[in-house]
Image 1 (tube, rainbow, N blue to C red):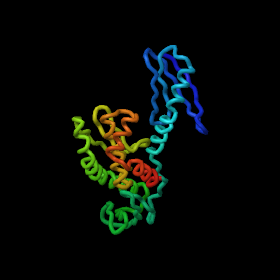
Image 2 (cartoon, rainbow, N blue to C red):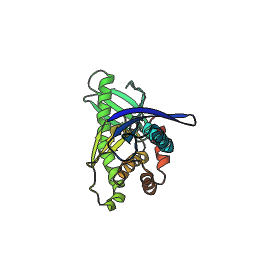
Image 3 (cartoon, one colour):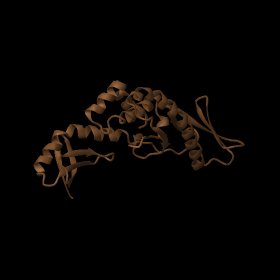
Image 4 (cartoon, rainbow, N blue to C red):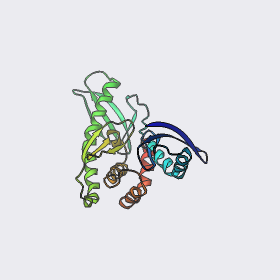
Length: 237
């Protein structure tokens, strides 16, 4: 196998791609989560044929790159001090730091009430808040998952196992062995956006790529998915 690279122009956009030659019969294009484009081509394929193939699918490629960009969490820097706002299910709540007999976080009357046994420390406040988010995510994501799943039961596929963890590049993913992973940070987004991410990933049960068939299914299950996706992007900027 050997490699090469190239680029095509589409209006003001320039799409760069890598080519991997191997013992295969057809040309294939992949867009990876980091935005890189990989063309898999049979050994001996002419560069012009590859260029034409990429140009023919350039709108699809740009759409895929946009999709991955919008699922890249962009969390503003936080200092974890009193008065600072933090999101939960799409709403802003201010931190209220108090001295107490135990370390705890409670959501009370529009505030994150953070109680500390020791003097205020941003690292400790962050740890307690992250733990609180993780506990809420475990419950809320399961509720949303159970609400989204019934439509997909007709595909006679085993219900994916739900896993929640921090991810740097994605809001969600569905593995081939049936593991639905959601980013803990998604708990900061509105419920409608959480449902969108889950539904998007569940559509991969039928279609493991982002083909036109995939988007037709997503449109059928959730006609307003584009509005939800846009809301997610705006909510967590």
